[in-house]
Length: 350
Image (tube, rainbow, N blue to C red; front, side):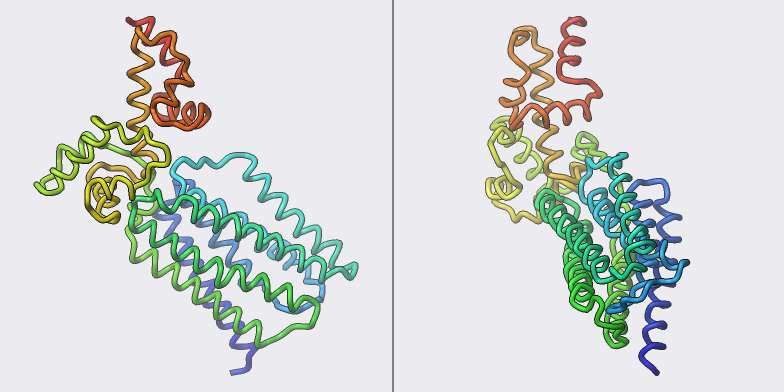
């Protein structure tokens, strides 16, 4: 089979698989932000498969220019998708859309104006440097929130994102920069299309192997219900010991407390403690577990008439928060009120 035909076959297979993934995601997760971002990622990846041409300096035909811009902006979607998937507190906002529009617009204007003017190499280098920047942001986000993630299925997805972002996203961008303007390479395109198909197939297989409810479900801790329903005596004792650490020693007040700290105190492996907090207490994120205890202490202090003159900042720091900003955001997310509003409400009701 000629290399050009093999390249087309690999691209077509990737696009077909991405279409199946997009339809499946729409059916199961179309109402969730992370699901919609995943669908957008799949569509942008299909545009990438249709338009990628390593080494060419020729101006693309008019129908391909919006597809090239869509493929370029897909790296922004990857970054947002990973933020929504790995950060339970993430909310999609207008600035995120503006970043996508800016990237899409820059790529489209480049295709319409700069490439026909003979600046193809400059455009290729600029677009792929932009892609490398968002790959770095994606990796940083994935790594930064990894240690606090309690969901085993989602932790495996993180590993996949790390490998795929580096092995394909980073390598592909560097390859395009190195080959920019040197002329089209059929072999390079076949290798690239094969790598891309492998990444897409691995992603589709991963979605089949992990439970969607584990990976995509929003955080909904229900500790009281989960605790009461623990049938295993050994796990029940572990939960009791963990709750004693939290309630009696107030270990959540310590600076930089980690899941490893608690696992050491309980003399159990970290993976077992992660599973216990996630599956038995209903938390998907370790920081949310800690903050729940911190906020309960803060609520009690704010409702106490004897502490009416204690500054909110002091209460936040005493409860284990490092600064007032994160405390205010976490408190309002749980109670729907600012700490000051909560204190005023409790004092007036007393």
